[in-house]
Length: 202
Image 1: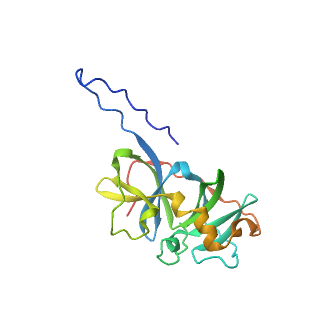
Image 2: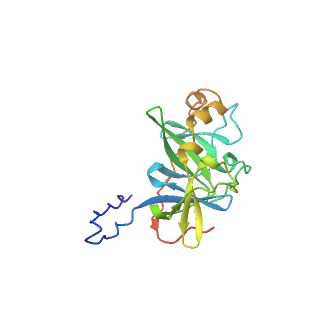
Image 3: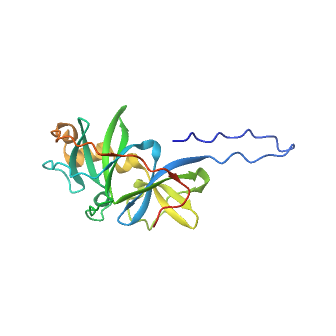
């Protein structure tokens, strides 16, 4: 990860002003249902090759189950199903993106199953537009903004809302995340993609 660019000091209007350095952040881009999405890379803990999660009884449809990640029980959310688009298809490019979600001063690891990971892109803050007022194909609170990539846009997700611990626990049953037995471990960590300058394939 790179540090955020520092803002330049503003000079007085009489002496003339210089534009402050453009502030940008890094985003992990990935595909769900053939559509590109982005999440701030600061929220991503790691990316692993897709493995079949262990089923847990009474889980909602968008919960694929749990995996054992170096001794930790990590629930896996089918992001396509979470968006109300039906279960995502597993292919050789499928992977699980493990996000770190803060809740009640605690950090929780939650995996999301995606079709494929594209790249890490730098997107300037000024290139993030507000979410559309209507016409989006998923819940408005899931969208943090629309990132401009040349002539295209990528939906920037509010990962804390998409993976709301309160909502997921309520839907899955209180304590389901923590009471699930740990399946056998199988560590197949995939390194995060290198930063890229080109936009992801739509």
